[in-house]
Length: 222
Image (cartoon, rainbow, N blue to C red; front, side):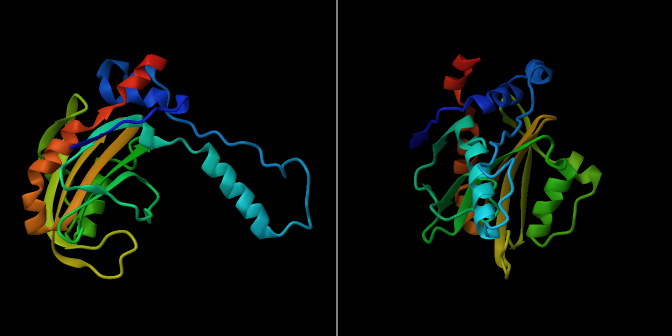
């Protein structure tokens, strides 16, 4: 197995405590995004093409965006590899592939705040699998698994998967997922692939989820 560890930027330090200790949740501040002032700010440039101004803004946002990949460490299961493909949603902090044709995928994403709430996120995944939404009662009865020293909601269902930006659904798929939500942040671990392949990798998914930890090196900065 391959272990991945990254250094955490100071702008993201607060969120580590949010995900690891219940009694420290209220003591942390939510991540705030800083943005440098454009070199064009404070003065008008009527002769500058809009494409140039757009590039300048995009560059500043990219420089200011916290690198959420540095918040965590994890161990990649044997046979899984990190994808070099561009994330169409722009929200994945880690994107893995597995299977004979790399048809299985598993990713981690982290969002500030409750990210719309558990019910909305579970039913978003249900919709992606061509399934009807769960009721609040059904969601309350979903299984839990330990994650970050707390219970995370575990999701597992079959269907025809149509991911973000896909034109056609992939039939005979299975989805496994963990959602750990707090007031300050929500972390998602989601795995999809052909049902037989997912069943073969279910244990690897559990092991991978348990390997995801806060970057302990960061705690020294606090």
